[in-house]
Amino acid sequence: MTLKALPHSLSQPQRLALGEVSILYQPPALRSPNLSGSTLRFGLIADPQYADADPDLENNLYYRHGLRKLSSAISSLNDLSLDFVVTLGDLVDRHWSGYSNLLSCYSALRHPHAAIIGNHDAQVISEHLSAFTPPLGLPKSYYYFSVSGYRFLVIDGNDISLYCNAANGEDRQRARAQLNALQAEQQPQAQRWNGAVSDQQLVWIEQNLQQAQELGETVIVFGHYPLAPLKKHILWNGEVVANLLCRYQVRAYFAGHDHRGGYYRRGNTDFITLKGMLNGPDNVPFAVAELTGSTLMITGFGGEISRVLPLNHHTPPQEADSESRL
Image (tube, rainbow, N blue to C red; front, side, top):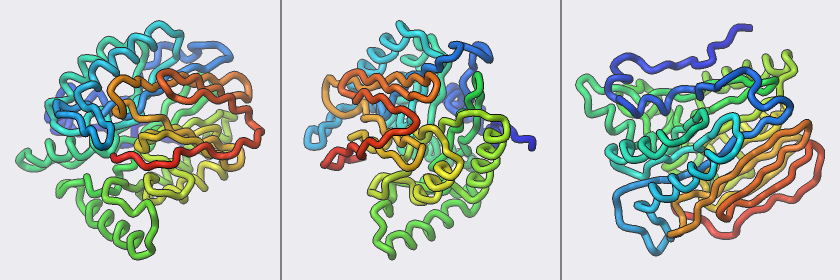
């Protein structure tokens, strides 16, 4: 089985139109095939959601603080021995111009970086690309990379979404139909600010899981949208994807999007949602994940929860009670 690590590379017009933002669509430039020996260690950031905008005090959202918070987290992560860092989406809240400031912060990061495209990112990027003549479609952003017996999948929850524009063919129409069907069924995830992975991406995910199984690789998956349990913030077809990951005993799935954070376990798969950096004037939540043998250890900073997750354990789901506005 031969799989492209990056099945949907940017077209030349997309690359030119995105400029420095095109780096968000690239896999991390890992330093070597065996970075940390038997221990794998990576940093995790979720939802900086920077904007040059006044805070939303009612919802405890501090947009301009994103630059200071992100710089603080990056400074702390730079002091640690890490294989790479992942930002789990929503680098900006709005405004194309915000990327220039955010990418300036990320230029100080000394570790390889993988960025997930969140729903706010997708909306800003799609609007930017649709203004060109002819309009340019929102790029697909799913790929894999491998390190030392581990395979990492980055999935794209904006694949089928209302963030797609006219240049994405029928993807937006498919999204409307899927959302309408979920709303008719009164499903909690039937929200305009969620999305879905396409059938094509589902096939690609399963092919990767099959190949990893054949090679004896441990699989970790990153995405912006949570997958489980069934509730307001998950991917439209989150249950389908979660079932697929559990069937192949994926070790863990990391997401952002739900700023409260959360934890859920099904079978041998841990589903971890990180807290959003946007929330609160001073909190700077981020985490470091460490895999040693069969144990996954999450060390939380700035209010993020620390967890020790052996492969076989029975921990009840830990969920916050209140919803955060996205």
